[in-house]
Image (tube, rainbow, N blue to C red; front, side, top):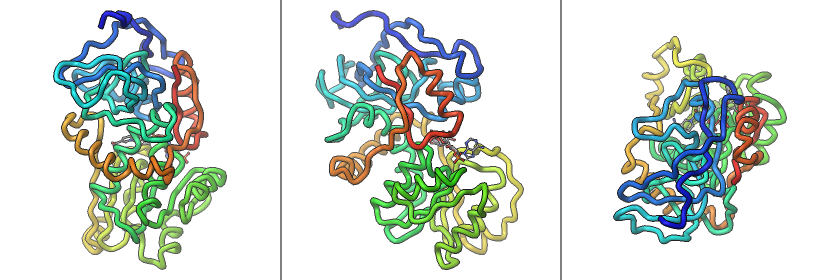
Length: 332
Ligand SMILES: NC(=O)c1ccc[n+]([C@@H]2O[C@H](COP(=O)([O-])OP(=O)(O)OC[C@H]3O[C@@H](n4cnc5c(N)ncnc54)[C@H](OP(=O)(O)O)[C@@H]3O)[C@@H](O)[C@H]2O)c1
């Protein structure tokens, strides 16, 4: 790679702490392993797990760089050994286990996909983390089908906005929860059939009311804590509850009777530590099922705001304010 600089700018957390600990530092350009491509990053998505990593609460998995960032979009500038899926110059987006907040990022080619037709680089960078997560949890683990009802908590989060759009695109009814009337309104504008401000209304009652007392077939939950028992109450018979985080705490006291009487399935998953090959299967499913929708403009990532890479601290502060609707993206 003779034409590429040996060093690059990258964002790391100098120590665990608030957004102010983020630093732009010179780092070596990533070396490429077998099957990897090097992406000149044009945009990098910001995710809640990045803020947890910055606080020292979510260390990168073994082998991943300490540079923050789980998703990027840009152009391929180098190919590792046996990388054959893309050519130099191709525009791609990629899910990465770390290293996204940087000028160059290595990605396994099987975890990269072409930028969907009509998407800007900023929109493309906002896709991988939430689309991989929503596809594997709502559609694969949760088995959401057309005509069923999805209850999604955190409806205006990056994950929530993606879940609303994809569930609607695949013919489900969607009920979303959010922390203000304004955010509930944003969920409705995104296509949700009903939206609940959970600070002023009970989402269990609202779900039962919206479903003629049937309940939700699939519930995507990032809140945990006391929501677990309430999700059981809001679920339909044979309902599936998929846990992807526990913003209100990992522990819950439960009455197990609804689990048995309604034959509920309560499952969950993480994305980042999963092997490249498992993420590749999700990438293939997205390419087959969701890329045509993106290309046709039937769903589009919701961009809340953009910040220059050097101002990643402001991006994290915005995310932690929870005032955002949709995705926050860093630009280079
Ligand atoms: N398991 C996985 O594979 C996976 C993958 C990616 C992300 N995640 C998780 O999914 C969640 C959403 O990620 P994201 O990047 O979309 O984040 P995000 O945009 O920051 O969304 C988080 C949302 O959760 C809501 N929330 C509810 N209770 C909260 C609490 N106690 N503290 C903070 N926020 C609370 C907030 O909305 P309101 O203000 O409306 O309540 C906030 O907008 C995160 O917890 C993340 O760690 C899991």
